[in-house]
Length: 210
Image 1 (cartoon, rainbow, N blue to C red):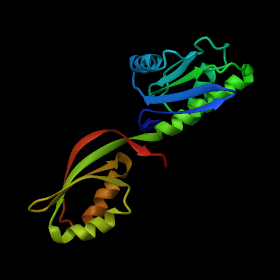
Image 2 (image 1 turned 30 degrees about the vertical axis):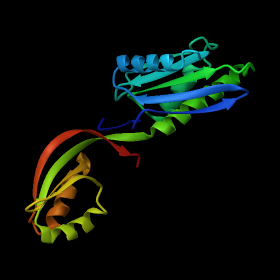
Image 3 (image 1 turned 90 degrees about the horizontal axis):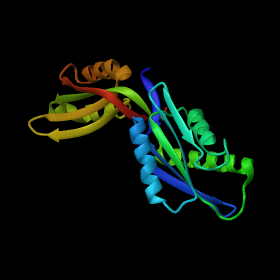
């Protein structure tokens, strides 16, 4: 499985319904220990809250899934949170929804909607991204070719990571593994073969959803 969805960063968002304040927090994590550490951080941050309900999904194939209602009626908090995560197709992430009770009972349906909505807000704030097998290259061209190359790269599925101007133009770019051969061929064509490239690194890297 060479593509999977996760979160770009840790983030949170909140909203209020019937005087109850719901704070949805989400973060990328890769182990249950990291997920529980994130939960503990939120528990400390909101230690006076009524509930800190959570869910996490670990593994590219969602091999580990855990959730907790943290004292809310069974099935009204943790399960709705994880169902939203599954619907969005995200893995290697954790969501904690903190509730400050406002004195008005929401009922089971109201709680499910509130926790589902809070999870969705948290995921949107943390930005869902796609993780792709990615290759990073170091390339070098002579100055007269640089403008032409820059123009060509504007339409390529790449990220230009770093550029240095010394005796020639040296630059680093990241490209999804699936696009690498086509990109290198096009760079070679544009420069009439007068480009040097070196594969520096292979890893999984986040790309915006396509």
